[in-house]
Image (cartoon, rainbow, N blue to C red; front, side, top):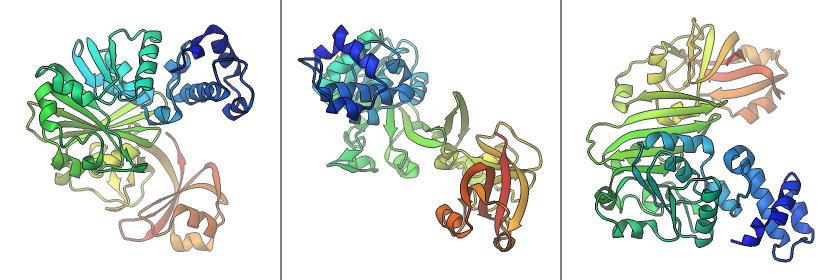
Length: 394
């Protein structure tokens, strides 16, 4: 951490040039003796990456930005807020894999004390500085191995252990729990010896059912999406819990939050109702799909499914609170009729349970992307390939 970057003249320069291209800054000669052009470019790049992802950081004077990879791997403020909601007021938390501390800073607002552990000494120093800037006074930084801190702590020293294991080993991505670092399966006994709750942030590509078989005492699973992009899975384990896990699909969009809760036992017991396309069409958010609420979401909102594998829903009456996109159906064509006459030269094309991919369909039928028209290529209850033309209403 180069403290010369924090000097007033350097900070003024960064503020005056933060809208410029970092590459342009990097190629210029630095006006400062102790701060290189590359360091200036890195700080400007960090600010630009934080404007949307971390607005609190971007709008605070004197923030020191870390390497690009640390910003890429950290949570957004939107998803960090979910972790904050999980922490009981006045409790003690340890973040074993602290990183740039976005999650830590939000959880610390509820905790009495939060221990932030980070192996990278430079990053730990940056977090310590930024916590002071942000006035997060109960965040204590430890530059070292969080597992070792845990081992040296008293039994039940913490109320919560938070861990975001690395999913990159030898430059490659991994999606199995046993391949992450730290290996959660190896440390389960230690974690419960030192705390009551374990909150694990895991890859959205993880197989939830497999993880449930491997992790004990899972009380909740949160599947979190931001603007229809599945960002992360949170597994919450409770030392005293022995029931089935409840799954919560959390949809974050346009500064709003929607939550849908169910259990896999409930999901298995539901018999779906199948219908031909009615007046409205519903396309579930990615969090609903990743969570596996294929039948539960239809039942809760009184909707019919178009097909067992299509995961599109329909109704005659409008359900505005549906967790996903809602459309008004204009017309439904068989694929055969659509081939004879495609009246939509421009449309947003989507496929659900259809043999061809979107790019092939657009090329084959000369459909230009965009506009307000939506075309869903799918399969109906009679196993017929159909095209649903619709306009989005929410």
